[in-house]
Length: 370
Image (cartoon, rainbow, N blue to C red; front, side, top):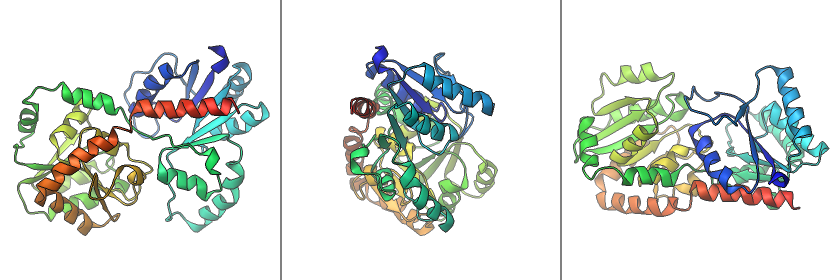
């Protein structure tokens, strides 16, 4: 077991990451040390952590000492890094070369064309050199692989990770709900079985497209079409003020895991009109619940998960007219909607945490043996 000891360095303990670790650790035939760079980064998660998971100190000197000691003393056979931007990840990439430890780097970064020109110039100069150092890259999907290829990473150093969520766990929870749950849960929130419900789940921040979604929905004058918004963030006050004059919108607030699954369950179509989004794991969650999605063209998972007309619809980012047309299309075409719902379940069946864990293990085995 000691000859396959690896170090995983991750950004923060999110629900997705903890679910992945719970699947990955039993899959890997060896020991895994887990190091988080931050206790919280994207938001204030309230999660119970395994006592064996370590969180790096905020003190820069202690960070450097801990990282160095991890590499030198623990005799790791491979290192898995969540990205390359963080100084600790950069340091580990360099240290791994010095101590001849193979490194795999995962990435959810797609190729965005709207970044400033000066940043593009610097990246075009630096990234091809930096990306020669890791032994393997594990992009979340197709668009993330294209990002790496753009910076001259050869195909032989790229393996799709298939970034996802606990698809099987979501489906298991839904399947154990009572037979009348669909109606009773809808009634709890004031909806009927005849309502056609769109759902947004995520941080209430501008880049998620919240303002465009509200503006689009305010122009839909059909009382049978409803919208649920779940999440928290800086735009909460904006949302609450907007909803005073807009009917048929329910703000669910910030929900825990099972409550979110229940929202997916009672909805019809998921909506993510983001200005940009590296991946969009909420799409994986919605599809696990059998829901097609309306997704903007700047969401990183669309090449892999959204097949236009089959598993969802793709709209132009920040286009209110596109959003309106897509929502009306689903409502007015119940047969197409029903077919898409079946297609979604078939498609997401290949995007499980079990498969993602196998892909990671396979890549780590490969770099350890080459």
